[in-house]
Amino acid sequence: MALTSINKAYTSYKSSDIEWIGEIPDGWSVRKLKWCLLPGRKGMRIGPFGSSLKLDIMVDDGIKVYGQENVISSDYSSDTGKRRISYEKFKEMEAYEVFPDDILLSMMGSTGNFSRVPANVEKGIIDSHLLRIRFNELLNLDYFIYLSNYSAAVSQQVEAVGKGSIMQGLNSSLVRQLWLPLPPLPEQQAIASFLDRETARINKIIEKQTRLVELLKEKRSALITQAVTRGLDPNAKKKDSGVEWIGEIPEGWGVYKIKFMIEKSLGGGTPNTSIPSYWDGDIPWVSPKDMKVDIIRDSEECITEKGVAESTVNMIPADALLCVFRSGILKHTFPIAINEIPVTLNQDMKALIPESKTSSAYLYWLFSGFNKTILNLCVKVIATVDSIESKYFYNLVLPLPSVHEQKIIMDYLTKETSLINNLMLKIEKQINLLYEYKQSLITAAVTGKIDVRDVQ
Image (cartoon, rainbow, N blue to C red; front, side, top):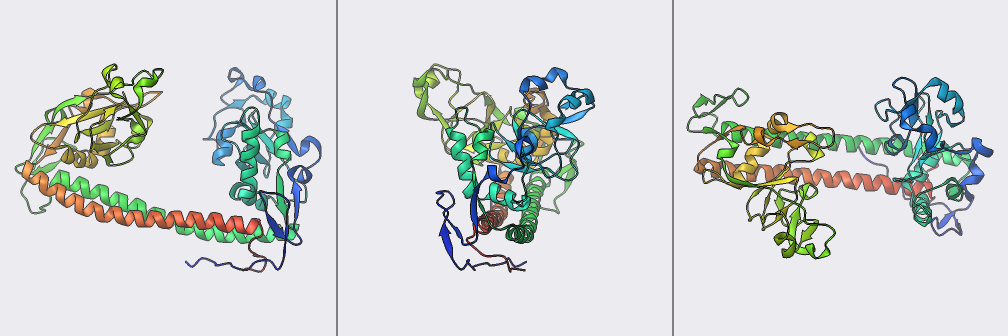
């Protein structure tokens, strides 16, 4: 699917006299947002005081209360946000009701994202962290969403006024002062229609490419699982492993509990954060947030030798298998990596030192192949954070070939997965470029850098 290439500029431009906006086409104007609102509180209303929406008045079945979680995700479904008020309470707060095509803005925390309320929205009101905006006939809503959420002309203003406010957030007075580059209304509609078409085409390509990446991940996972469960020779004689969820394994392979594959397991800890001399050293202190790579060579935070000596942290020798044992990420995956250098760990991590019958490199492939099994059989789901249950993990039985065959399998998997990984990187690069093109196209159209009025 070919993308539209637009290079046509407007015939002439003029200065907007606004730093964030720069030059605009002749025939366009620059207006403050407040001049585009319906009169009075119809145009802009802050949500009710937080004290009027305390948790103790919430009910299971009633009128929905919309909050930041809905605006940030632009998700107004019943699954996002669980707060509800009674019908009687709603009657007191009808002035804060949400209607289709209202524009909502989060004023605290993750500020600056304007969200258009969908046509099928469930009846509800805004909470104290939201601002409800309704425009007059000067502004096309589709054009405004493209302008406000994708163009630096508005986002830089929002960021500047947000940082400049006392509470590092937005308020209605600040939002009213935002400057908007505005073409005539028919032109706004033409720009919005053009962007609807083009972004839909871009999104369709991104969706296909993203699906391709997911298929490659599945292929990589299946390749690893097959190799560490059945070996590389499809004609090899098989035997029953004695474990129902493993099934048959090649003759000559054994099954072992994880605790018999490792010499020892080392945990971690956190040096006192109030003692500066423990921190900003040169010893990596690995936590779950560092476990996004296969090989650990550094960490976001480091500690000093004094921090090691005077705390419960352990020095982990190079070439151990690092595992996340406590984190919300365990809902989805079991992160593992090999440390190329000596490191320390925080308390949510474990380091496995392999026994002579295997290696950290092979354990990496083995655990990768049985990642879902480990999650299903060993993760303890609790309210605050998920964790690996040690008694289940260390007693989990997995197949293990000879050291010689482990080496052959590792060489094979390293080669084959590298090919898949390289292909995924190329596709992900293409996806990122598509996102960048989409952003630049929207920005150019809503700020008048390109003329799309006659583009079909």
